[in-house]
Length: 502
Image (cartoon, rainbow, N blue to C red):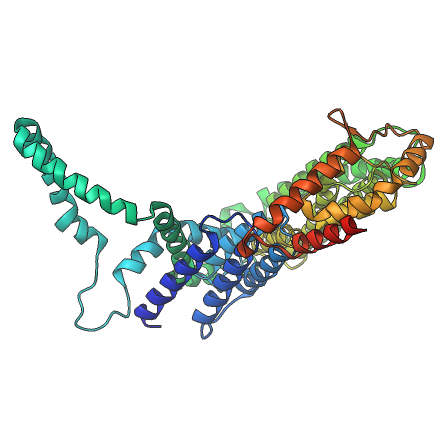
């Protein structure tokens, strides 16, 4: 595409950024700009081949843009930024299915894209001189600094000359009254961000190097002096060590899983105790076990052990070990379920669910790596894309609304932490207001279950705190511009207006 078209799109997006973000707080503006960037990037590369990660990051940016416009959860803003950053790198190497490689290209492109914007590297108009930042600095920048230096000397040596310069500077200073420095900075920031997507050029060499790496492992030939009955001596030693270690770890993990099955699956009884450590201990055990499992497997199956005939038995031991880690992850899921059952939903408990999902998918990828003799690069690529996708998808739902509704609806079964609910975002206020008449019933049910229920927050009742937040929201919301709007906040304001009229 012609550089001037790219130049124009960058400027248009920068103007859009200025319009959306100048003196505006986060809201619909993030979603609109994120969607615009994704569409522009997609259109510019409509005729280029694109891979899984490119499609995944593009879809996530668009989906999270809608999520931000829908409910405006803080986590959604964070995940939109992460997905957009991955997209900027994936646009440079669109066929590379590796998040780390894309982020590396994104960091390298931070300033290269700005240079492309000013220099029009490829496809410049024939006969036109290309702008060069380096050449401009050499021609104008260094002489300008020298002129400033001598100007300072001359002003100090001659008061009449200093008066003339001061008069000129005062006249120039009056011009700043007509210039909005903040708006200029916002425009430049928008231009900087836009260039990351519009001025980036596909790196054919980086893609070629990455794609030339083998998907599966290749058997390395043995040296003649190391042969023993057709096998490498060190390979036999490594095989025996691996078998001993994997079998031993299988036995230990089996004992742990049996105890977990009895304690968590069958023998769990709740008598009012806190379950925080109950979940956290299981999670840390799982993390440690998964890291040891992955590290051990990658170490022993890094080379020719994959092709050893007698290694089939070792592989079955690895499969058993992976299955036991899978069961361990399920046990942590049951622990988390028990926690939610008695203490309700919370952000971290939801985070554990997504963490376990990523772990289970990761175990499947490790299994395929051993079973198919895949290269380490293939495994790392799958793990990076899986982790990124699971993390970004977690930013789509309105978790604040889900948590609030779930916890209040299950007040007869689980603990209701009113101080936690009182800090929920503004769009949840109508839900809290509708449940306010039930506070007395909630207190009775909570006390019967021997929960430490309290509706007093910083010396004020929950109703007083809630009414203060509602009054502040109803007062501040009409003052906001449409750029700061979100669908759930708008709906909440109208619902609160309706409730106040009754």
